Image (cartoon, helix red, strand yellow):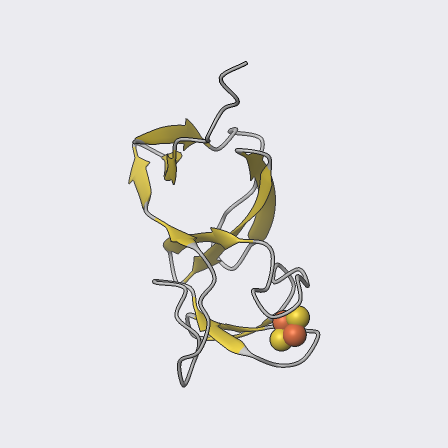
Amino acid sequence: MKHTIEVPASVDLSLGKRARVQANGSDIALFNVDGQIYAIDDSCPHNGASLLFGKLDGRWVQCPAHGLRFDLANGCMRGGGMNVRAYPVDVVEGCIRITLPTPITDPQ
Ligand code: FES
């Protein structure tokens, strides 16, 4: 199951900007690269560093901790190995929506 969250209008994701939002108990890093919005987990799969302020090279972000690079479009690591979770983003009439997996809830 999946659900969609809406990025608050107060979050500035104009051209070249980055932002962090919380959803499903996780931090999601958002990037506006050349007008395209990307959403990935803000936690490097190597050792958990924040990717939000990693160096960008086009749609590739470099982890500031140890330098692994990830494709913002699909979360794949350059050269393979491990991936960061990437989420579909839709922009409708200026409203940014991220599609996330439905969180697993404790049945108790
Ligand atoms: S924590 Fe990102 S490369 Fe090590």
